[in-house]
Amino acid sequence: MNSSLDDYTRLFSSLRTDKNQKRWLSHTCNRAPHKPFLLLSILDLIATGSINKNFIEPSFELAETFAGYWTRVMPIGTSGSMSYPFYHLASAGFWHLITQPNVQHVKGRNISSVKRLRELYHGGKFDDDLFSIMINEKSRRKLQSVLITTFFSPEIQPIVFEQGVINQNATQYSAELLSTAEPANQFILTKDVTKKRIKNKIRDQGFRKAIVKLYEHRCSLCGIRMLTPEGHTIVEAAHIIPWNESHNDNPQNGMALCRLCHWSFDEGLMGVGEDYEVLISPAVRQDNNFPGHMETLSGRGIFKPHDTLFWPKQDNLEVHRKTKFRLFR
Ligand SMILES: [Zn+2]
Image 1 (cartoon, rainbow, N blue to C red):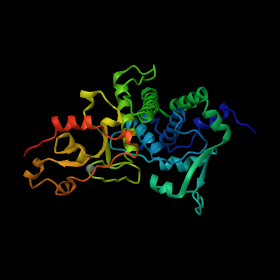
Image 2: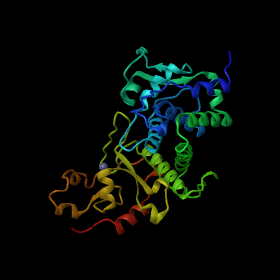
Image 3: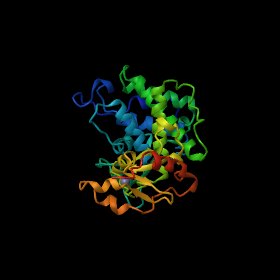
Image 4: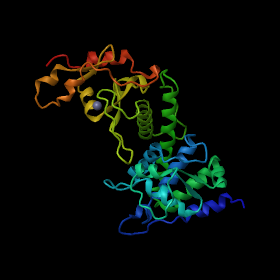
């Protein structure tokens, strides 16, 4: 039997969620927002083409999109894992988990993190009818709207809609930055985005996605690569010539850097030489409190993307060497 958009609209609006009034604020109609956030995140990734077949991987991209909704809507200091709804949505009937080889699906399992989820499950799939409905833009908007109006209070609904616009455009922006090494500043945001604040968020998020992907979560200067079980990464996307001076989000003006290296680079304590070697400023040596490992990086090759098109441009690094890098103690 074929199910229609109306059937799924009903199922989406009657998702089972935790209704503990003490735990969940009026924002989310005193209900847990995990399942709506997961479905909204999947709809966003379908809209941008990141998900184009009926197999949904518990990817870090999905976890990050979920976290974007969470941070935007939920009180500061709270956190929620995408792994819970990914697993528990199976009770809704239209979502089917696909186990990893040699793993059995067991009901009521405690899935504590995205890492754990990935160990046990290869992914999930929707009813085929539902997935066909989701790839149609008009029906997708209807499902998105049902989730937002059912599970979020009227005051917060515009923010949830706005987060969807940001997610979809940031993914698109990141794809554009990665599709060419030509200056990407001609990027035109969809017409419905007119507010400067939202444009900046889209730009920030898109640049970050592109750079983190190119550098595979590895710090270009010290080489560290660390991810939490939730998929939070140690690296940030750094501009070589700051955005406010260059207005340049081209990956050739970017590097993935850990927090320590990002700060040190911006402060001119670290730099990159003409042969892509790490430069450590003599200013580092004047203070015994500077971490000793920085010295050991001096002269070592930086970590660069596989594709030479995306390597940091020497012109940009030269500007950093001339204007920021501290040559003296
Ligand atoms: Zn580093």
